[in-house]
Length: 466
View (cartoon, helix red, strand yellow):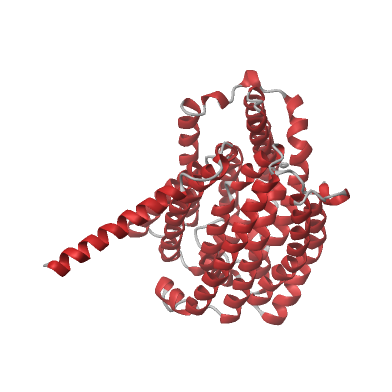
């Protein structure tokens, strides 16, 4: 009894100690840091659940259709998602403007910026959808995707439905931009989680009751998150963010120039990033066929957990960097960078663990139906390490609007990426496609590191300060 009592007291002491340290962690530090800690902690929990749901939904969806059809969906959705980048940088421009106005106390303009952004995005999405509606009639998607004819399915109809949903996302995703700019990243993460949960429940019920259909799958996987986004927009604008609620009377297209002064460069950077990081599926389907897209995306999703986790940590700091820079608080930014470098080393350790255990994880996850080449796992691990390193520096540079160096890097990299992916893919298979992205990161990461250091130290001049 005495030993049991001592053990209980030790356990109680340990619990109290852990509670005290957690409470101390979230109650000490700069106000900006405390807000970031709150966002990171809650977002890690929500995005962690979101990642788990994403893993669960993959085998269910593959069973609902089949690996080839799932590969067709992945490739088509990745191609059409390119058009979401055609917001001409408005979302990122809005994010920086709201954060900047909050830092300087200029709250009156934010509502005009929000209303104007919604108006421009609505016009853009309408024009783009009409153009796609016409062009889609002349496109042979089976040939573009190197996909077989699927009985009872028209890829042109599928593309039209999917594109229509993406156009709606074009507008509705603005609420996430507003939440992130207002230092409420965790609320955006919650919206994503609910959307995925609804998709999972519906696709699971469909897999048990009806035969597989690509169109129905698209409506569920793309439509459910949109519905959640729409409801969330109404909720937040009617409550906590009523001061930013968009209205026609606040639309002022003169403000578009301010949004696009930085947003326009963001747009070009996004296009470069699109070509570099979002064309792998189309290259793979042309070189090897749609079923290999499924193989590639399984290992991508496995390592995506790490890059997503790191992106969650960096997410709140975009607007925090904006705030700190406009208040000339460079010492705070230096402190954040020291911590981020330490977290990056932790990520490397986690990536190596995933790499070593990936064959067993894949087998448990999707069974023996899909074989992942280990060379692909190695190349994806290296890519993830480089991508996380780039996130540290791009978050600062994006937050303070110093992105011309990124623009030049993305333009140059975009020119060589697809030809390089094709050449390396032909030589090394799926791993070669990922290797082309690694080559790009080997060029970009050191340059962005140098620029970030110059800005933090106050020595950035010329192109380094643009």
